[in-house]
Length: 328
Image (spheres, rainbow, N blue to C red):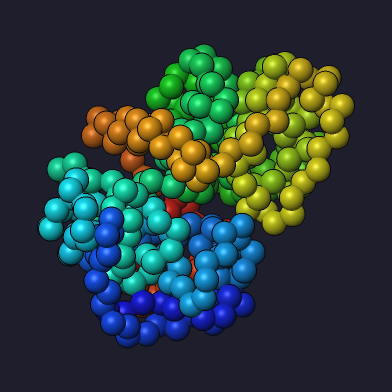
C-alpha cells in the first residue's frame, strides 16, 4: 500500500507519499481498499498540529473515505468481503488502504457512489446534529448559514430546506451565492460587498424584514460572529460549529440577555461517541434522504490522490465550493 505520511505535524509541506506494508485487520477491524477520500477543514488543522485531536506520530491524515472491504478481522459480523462502505475514523484516508474500526463503517446502499459517500458523513452528520438536534429547527423558521458555500454550509442548506425552513446563505463571492441558491437557499448575502459589520447587519435585517433569523449556523467564527449574533431574532439559537476564519471570537454576554437567545455548542464527533444509538438513527435517516434525492453532496472537484498537496492549497485558499475529493 501507499499513504501520505505525517511524521512531523508542521504543515502540509511535511507530508510524504510512502510505500508501507499492507496491514492485517485485528479484532473488530476491517481493511479497506480506499476508492475516494474527502478533504475537510480538520484535515488541514491536524497536519498543522492545531486540531483538538493529536494522533500519535507518524499518522496518515484523511478523516473521511469510502471504499471496499478487503479483509475482515475477528468478531466482525455485520460487514463482509467486497462490501461498499464509508467511514469517518479521523485518520487514515489519504492512502490506498487503511484499517478502520468496523463499528465506524457505514454500509452503502445500492447506487451510493464512492465520491458522494466519501463526502457525506462529516458534513451531513454535523449539519443534522446542529440544526435538527441542537437547534430543534422547526418548519417555517428562518436560518442564516455562514460559510454557506463550503462543505458543512451546503449540507446545512439542504437539510434546513428539507425541514421546511427559510434559508439565508452568506458567502464571500457572487459565484458562491449563486451556488447556494441553486441548491435551495431562498436568499444569499455576499459579505464582501455587504461589508462587515454594518453592511452585513443591514443585509440580514433586510432579508428577515427586521425580525432577525431564528437560527444562525456558524462554522466560520472570527469577525463574523458578533455582527451575526447582534442580528439574531428573539429566542434565537446561535450554533457554534467551527472557526474556519481562524480566531475564536468572544461575545458580550449581555447580547444573549437582550435577545433571549442561546449560544449552542455543536460537537458532532463527541455526540457520535457519547450517543451512538442516536447517531446511528440520524445517519440511517440521512441515507434515506440521500436515496430520496433530498440531499446530495456538492462536489467542487475530484483530484488524484497523488495531488493531495495541491488540494490542500485549494482548501486553504477558501476557494472550495462544497467538497474536494481525492480518488484512487
